[in-house]
Image 1 (cartoon, each protein chain N blue to C red):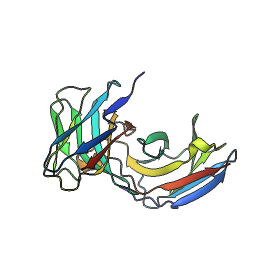
Image 2: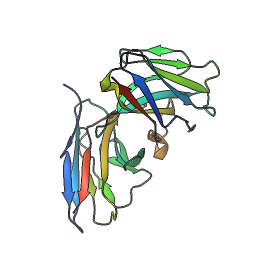
Image 3: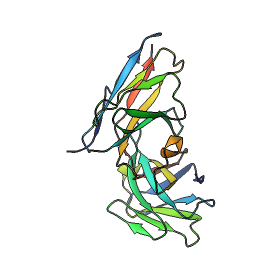
Image 4: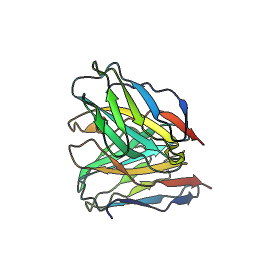
Length: 115
Length: 112
């Protein structure tokens, strides 16, 4: 699996857009980019995923560069409840079994939304 | 509401004692997973199961055991052989062949 690189922490003002970057320069052609977040002492929550096109849902937008070596998760109007650790993960699209079947969570980016 | 439940939220274990963490899902997902999270760290896979009565070791299975007698349930036993069991344990499930996993609220295990 491709490794990802994220900044350890970021701050964002409440009501402003939060842009969380992720580098995945070794991503292969069939690997998706997934984003999860984990609010303190809770289970991770799925946010969004994409392959090469930009994606948007009710929670966020995902912008993937044309070369797919990096992506940005955008929370358009951050609230205090968006304070969490955000994980960027790259995974293949098919089940392969073994320990390759798990999602590999790194340390993520701790986003602090401030009033 | 569909979802994954884990119980208890907090669990205390005495030295040499086995404890079992519960994980139930009503999402009709085939695949279920157990992860361990230590403070300030990412998640590490303990065991996973793709189908009833079958399960596979993950990256850190030593000192743990699981069963999958029902599709909805995937309990994890932390045995006395696990020398450092204090951690946050997370259960997840997914549709087989789909990579999106849905997580439960977690169980925090503490050793007395």
